[in-house]
Image 1 (cartoon, chains in turn purple, green):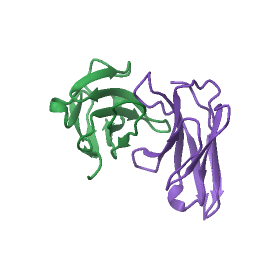
Image 2 (spheres, rainbow over the protein chains, first blue to last red):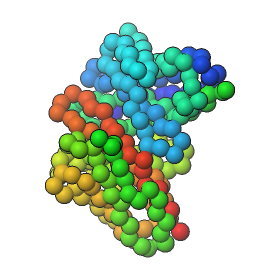
Image 3 (cartoon, rainbow over the protein chains, first blue to last red):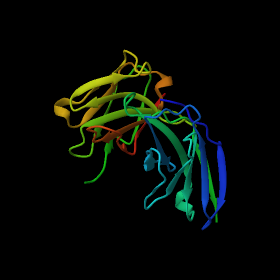
Length: 111
Length: 115
């Protein structure tokens, strides 16, 4: 799986939007962009995924750059429960079946 | 559907002992994955099953590690002759995949401490 680059940490105020960036300059045409998050003392949790178009679900939005070399996970209104490590993962559907997590971005939400 | 469950949640053992962990996936999920996570790092892939067949193993899975998924249902991960370096969180995930991409659902993990 291609590698991704994320900031080690970010902070956000509660009830404000959060934009978590991810660079994936070596992405291939068959790579899906997945986001997972891991709350303290829990297993990772699926957030969202996309291929080319922007995606929305009840948890977040995923904005994908036109050249697909970067993407941004958007939490529209951060809550204290959103404090977690967020992982941006590329998944080639024709290649590896496991998830390559990297070290992710630790999001701190300030009350 | 109660999600992926793992047992035990915590295990403390002495070096040299054998340990076994169990994972119960979401029913009807055909894929089951094992990961290991050490402090401050993201999870690392160990192995995965499609139904009862073990299709891939990471180089991290030494000869002391063995995993099974009899009848394509629950899975067990056994570590023989544990070492202090085996101390980690062991995570199980399951998914249903027929083609394209899939979503993995993780259990709460088993935290292993080797003294």
